[in-house]
Image (tube, rainbow, N blue to C red; front, side, top):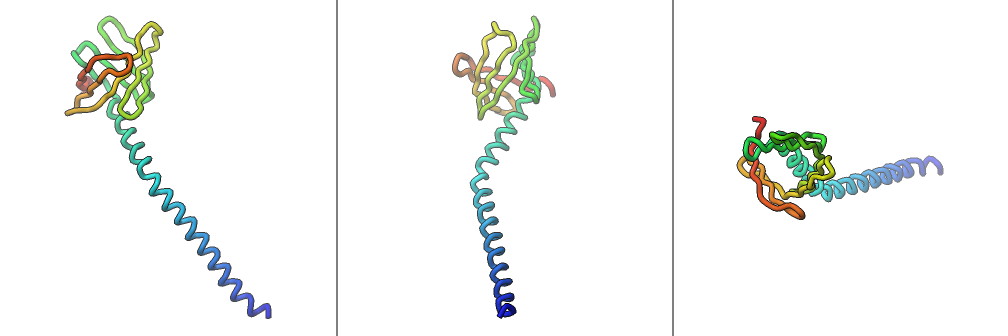
Length: 134
């Protein structure tokens, strides 16, 4: 009798393993589909962050430098002010190291290789920058 059960138990074990594999693959596939918008947004956000890195000027004298480590500097003929910056979607917040400096917030965009800052929150004005490091 035991010999008759062995082939059946082997088939049952194979079917159980196959079902488990199908369930796992299905879960991963569904998870991958639901992560697609998040992955796309992350790629888009990384592109924005990488595009802003560099040196930008409005008039040849006022220069914003953005580095990869979310640090930067405002370089003026009278001196340099270092800052940290944070990008969320199309907004950038600049936090100057000097406590007496106003920390601006901007919505930003790129148009024809120009960087456009539009003041938000406690910041006003619109500023157009061109790359200073090409």
